[in-house]
Image (cartoon, rainbow, N blue to C red; front, side, top):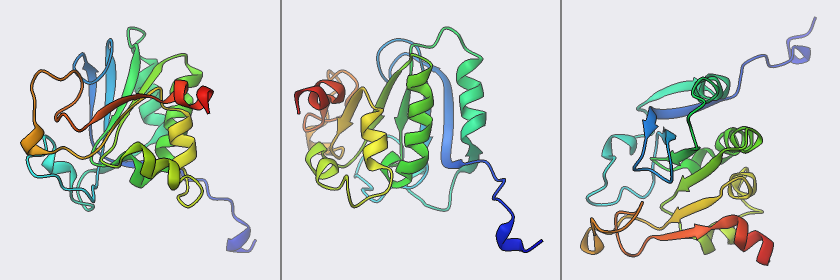
Amino acid sequence: MNESNIPDSKEPELRIAGLVQESIVDGPGLRLVVFAQGCPHRCRGCHNPHTHSYEGGLNVSIDAITNAIIQNPLLDGVTLSGGEPFLQAKGFAELAARVKAMGLHVMTYTGYIYETIVAGLNRHDGWRGLLDNTDVLVDGPFVLKQRSLSLRYRGSSNQRLIDVQQRIRGG
């Protein structure tokens, strides 16, 4: 049999910096948090500087992450953080779709602003799928001069909490 006819049996993977099995600070309710590895923004004062390098972290199958979610029936949702999830949008879109199919909430953090993501939906593989399967998007880079400990789910006042599904319904 020709090698080109052999189907790719490798499970889809994400390059992640780590997982937090249970968090109450990274979105509403009890959440599993997936930290993407690699970030082009490299914000000064970033809470997760270990996620910036593209070489760090480890490859984890989407099936393994999905199984971790299934094993905790107390979860209200999953948070996709970083690093930058939109750098691996196709894989994170698949994970988010699985999470939504389980009836759970998806929150995604990004250093990009919402308008940049919408403008790039047709140019970047997976961006539409990730955005369409996100309930709440926290957008914008962390800005140290605008840091505030009083903001819910955000680090700096320039970042927004965007109800993506409401925006999609509203056109």
